[in-house]
Amino acid sequence: MTEIPKTFKAFRIHNDAEGYRSSIENIGIDDLNEGDVVIRGEWSGINFKDALAATGKGKILKKYPLVGGIDVAGEVVSSECERFSPGDKVLVTGCDLSEKRDGGYSQYVRLDSNSVISLPAGMTTREAMGIGTAGFTAAISLYRMEALGQTPEAGPIVITGASGGVGSFAIDILTRAGYEVHAITGKVDQFDYLEGLGARQCISRHDLHWGQKPLESIRWAGCIDNAGGDMLAGISRVIDFWGNIACCGMAGGIGLNATNLPLILRGVSLIGISSMNTPYDIRKVLWDRLANEWRPNHFETIVNNEVSLDDLGGAFDLLMKGGALGRTLVNLSDAYVS
Image 1 (cartoon, one colour):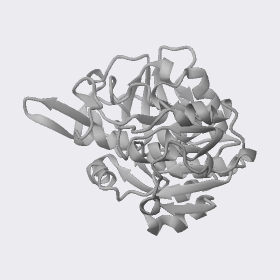
Image 2 (tube, helix red, strand yellow):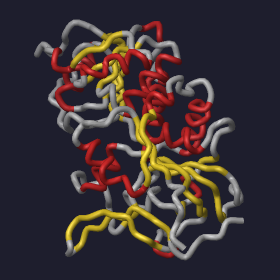
Image 3 (tube, helix red, strand yellow):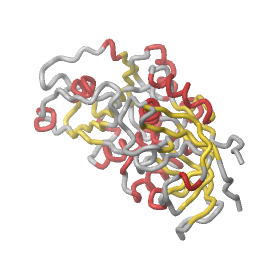
Image 4 (cartoon, helix red, strand yellow):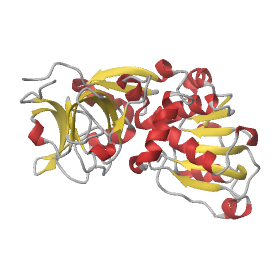
């Protein structure tokens, strides 16, 4: 049985009289929120939300100080919940981590068992965190679109913000599920990367010129939108009858200057995607699919960078500047301080 050391490394975020700041600290288990499951962290990942929280450029945390990181996977060290035993491999994505609870950027993590998912058979903790909230968000989007009748036969699905983590996994997962996928990105130098993931057509967002009528000529059967703002408004005007738009990001802004005519005249559904609060039973279903029929075919292409806890600051800066491609893993298995 693994013993919890007196101190271990964690990436902690503060906001107090000394200002907003984040860094690696040596902390103990009693510095963490209460919880009935303790794991030794093995892997985490970097999401846009993590970068916003760490840099203070987004109002993410509801209390301070907190350990950052909205995802984590590792091995159970101790458990007061009968569903988990020491040695079990588990994962958590979202569920208030790095918002109301200490998150996953820590070598030991204390969790609420209601958020903990057993690692699906055939999946490693590294794979789970490579997929992470990004791939999980793409999976929720497809799950909810199909619940409203989306099918490959209806026509192509367009992905906005396609070169990021959610967009990359969305292309891969939808292609595997039989959909024709088109990709919109501002990074024209990444067209080859997106086509390699399965995108049938790549479009520069700089070349998109939406008409201003409430309804424009139909172009796609559905959309997974990571941008929001003007992109989402424009997309809403060109989706086919009974198509679905899964709204899961805000890289282009939180405003929505649109009419309801696509909804009431074409039957288009605008679906809000909140990976943070997905019900437990749906989480289990989706992680099982991600380990099986929706398992990404291009995992190593998408998950193309790996950092340690000590490297987080530079990785966040790169993401905030728009320089990141695909997904970055965080290796939590560095030697801890004892």
